[in-house]
Amino acid sequence: MNPLFFLTKQGGLRRKPFVIVTGALVLVTGVAAIALSLAWPALWPVFALLQAAGLAIAVYVLASRIMNVRRPAASDSLAAPTGLVDDITRTLNRRGITSSLIEAMAQSQRYGTPLSLVSLGIDGAQALVEHRGPEAEAPVLETVSAALSEVLRLPDRLGRYEGWEFLVVLPQTRTAQAMLVAERLREAVAGAPLTVKGEKAAVTVSGGIAEFGRGQDLERFLANAHEALYRAQKAGGNQVYAFTSAP
Image 1 (tube, rainbow, N blue to C red):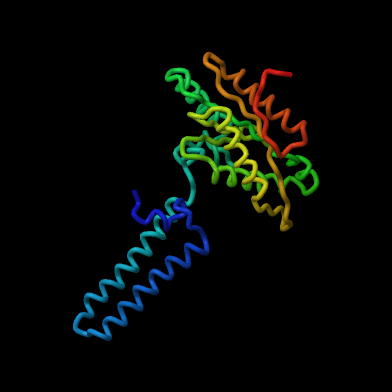
Image 2: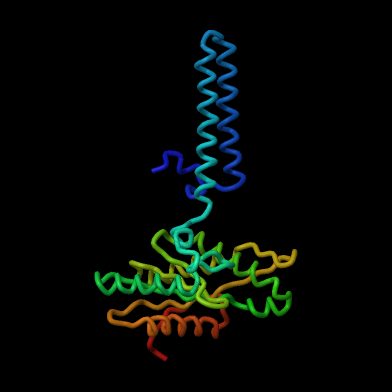
């Protein structure tokens, strides 16, 4: 494990705090090296090494942040072939997320492990595009996909299924757990800053959850998640419903 993981973006340190900590690291080691070399001139090579070590650590942390600026495990898009990645969101496209879902279903079927699916629809996105023009589509999709990616766990898979809909595959997850994840996703999108053509805007998402049933086919699994999403949107949006066979 990265011994300086807590300084990287994945370790929770971002933007201004990251700059402050790494800058302070270089400053402290530099000042210490200069002060000690003045106090004991004969040992200046040792103190020069101390300063060099501080600079090396700062460079290492910076490189770690750059290399891990995205969370590849959320959608696995960085490792996916180009033909499986959505051009706008850089998450998996319909083909990619469907393939991931089929693979997860096969694993669940074989080993008897739980599996849940979340269908997320962006509320009011079409109205926003109609009001502000087609240029609003990309910012909305990019903002939503980025917010979703930040929340997802390592085994989860995210993809843009079609239009304004995303699918999230949640292995080893039952409905109750999926509800908690979906709520975090909903809250992340609601709080994400969005700018469209220089003006602030806001969107929300509705979610539909379905748990995989042993022997269930792909069409039924997707249909259950879509039905739950439809109920959430019909109820006013910005909420999450779990599929139930009850009317």
